[in-house]
Length: 115
Length: 118
Image (cartoon, one colour):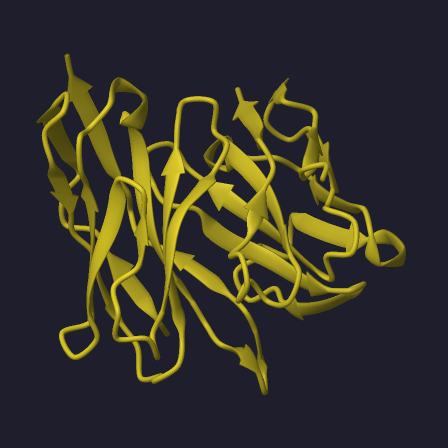
């Protein structure tokens, strides 16, 4: 079974620029998550999709972050404009049924550096 | 809101020895799931072990086992016969039950860096 695919692996941008991350979950996984992991900390949930609908975006900074899930499969996370404090690893994960069976399956993440 | 606390920022162990990583959590739910994840420098989050709250028996996976104390809301990970490849950041995580208004949110602790000395 193919894993969760994410791209790009690394991205360096200047503050106030925009950036987008892409995620392709495991086939058949209805639930998709985006997490932000600041260096030395645990991941923090940004947004959770169930199929193509948002079920939790309470910690998403909506003034600069946006996300969508196309046709209930791929997802993109966008930051516009970026701030220095957005430097982090952005992890995408997916699960079959809310993670009960096997937890989540994570991608390798995108390391964003804002300079 | 559920919280997960890992009170040991760093731990070290000699190769072939045993080490225990601590985790406590706070919840008002009775049915939930707990996980330990390993994150090596490659950033890939790897599932180590899972525990269903309704099961009293502690989960084991080869050299990895947990001590689940539901009343105390404690969930520690024991690594036996430590190997150099076990060196990584370890995260304890709590999963909301799926159902009602919950779609399975995973909340992580702050992590424990494990160093294995040869």
